[in-house]
Length: 165
Image (cartoon, rainbow, N blue to C red):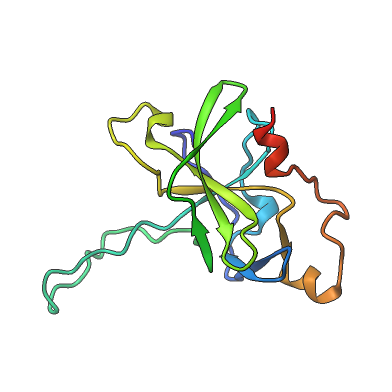
């Protein structure tokens, strides 16, 4: 993700998305089409910022600082598992280390997180500030209820196609 600030079209509505197997896996205040996309990559993944880890409070009487600005976007993955070891994927810029996020029910890869080394950082391991959501692996709750087909109007790039490049 670039260092420039992302302006997200957040709302008071919570949008929910399901895996193709109908398992609930994503809730966000920003609809998926409004999230920025990776344009320098074959998968055209949506970039969803993740909330920071919860603050550890040393004392029960300690209160969080009031000068922290509220987030205008909130998104979280639900019932997903993350691969313990990364997969190396060939990209236009060389190679990427990706830790795939998978559906907790059917193990479909629905997104990935990059390694800190991808951003020229001294840190090692998986970046936890955002997740790249693969197009074609989701359906909105309303589309699922209506019985709409996932491939109707949604560009689909499978993980096998990205890895095979």
